[in-house]
Picture 1 (cartoon, rainbow, N blue to C red):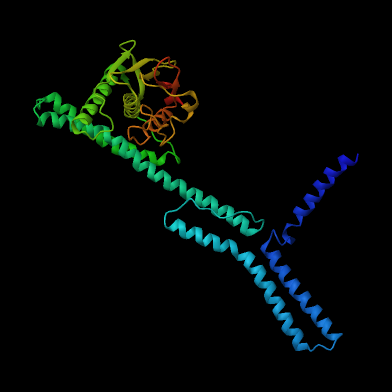
Picture 2 (picture 1 turned 90 degrees about the vertical axis):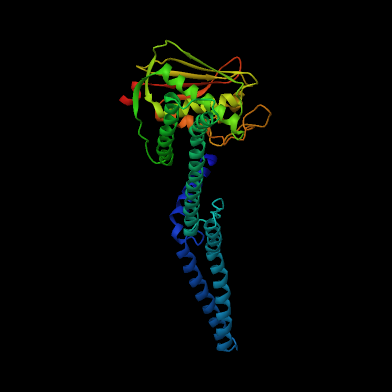
Amino acid sequence: MICRWRPRARDLWDRFWEALRPLDPYRSVKAALGALVIVSVIITTLLVFVAMHSATELRVITVFSIIASLLITQFVATGLTAPLGEMTEVTRAMAHGDYTRRVRADRRDEFGDLADAFNRMAADLEAVDTHRKELVANVSHELRTPIAALRAVLENVVDGVCEPDADTMRTALKQTERLGRLVEHLLDLSRLDNGVVPLHARRFEVWPYLSGVLKEANMSRGASTLSGTGTHTRADVHLHLDVSPPELTAHADAERLHQVVANLIDNAIKHSPRHGRVTVRARRGDGPEGLVLEVQDEGPGIPESERYRVFERFNRGGPGSSGPGTDGGTGLGLAIARWAVDLHGGRIGVAESPRGCRIRVTLPGLESSRG
């Protein structure tokens, strides 16, 4: 019976103490200032009472009363203004670009609430600064592919490898147009956290579409080899396309899907062994004009314990001569692919494979536009 009564009594006491919060000096600045005044008055009254019943002069009592009041006021003021000094230091650090610092929020009064709000504001500013840096990195990452392909075409023409015929110029024009579209589309990354980026979905034939993506990938590899400044010089990797049925059609945003396939191919090439093979496979999805895409390499694969981190931004994997992150990349390709797939309402993930790594993309097709 006593064991049951003690928790109930403690609960009642906690409620009573919470109700007295405005009177608790540790929970209210107003209460602390009121307590300061009350203590000062009590000390002064006691000293006057002592003077009345002793031979001590009143002026001596007055001096002692003033000194005691100043000491108490200084002690209380130091405790109340300490958080403000800490916030001032953190604010100066934020003005110089350091958004990682925080203030202590262990007080129970109004300054504690202010510290909580200040830390939340600092976290928001840090997130905005990080998002700005990621946006610049994303733009640089995505613009690299069409620039490399365009450079390859122009270098081939200048070196006499290719004739400046209609097909060559058409390829160069296509890359230039894609470059302009990417400048506009990649700016949509700034709205990832605040809104929905519109999709321009349409029906298209999968085989010629993916064939063009693979051709551009080959041209990009050629540009890296010729210039010697690319992120990979893997001209030895063979690209294979497998679309079944050949007349397969899908409904999606072609430019966004291009981002997905190009980044997956680029990632697969970088992790392929010498004279390896990268297979791009396309099949019909479950929904009307849905699509299932798979990009598979013959590399070391991804450990199951690391698969949940594959699509995180700036994740470049662990060390190793053949592992992710050894090519000098930014770790943004798969993150951009996941973003584009999410816009379609689809799914992307690492599928089981007896050899290498297999990334599977599932797009709902017309179902996404109905939602």
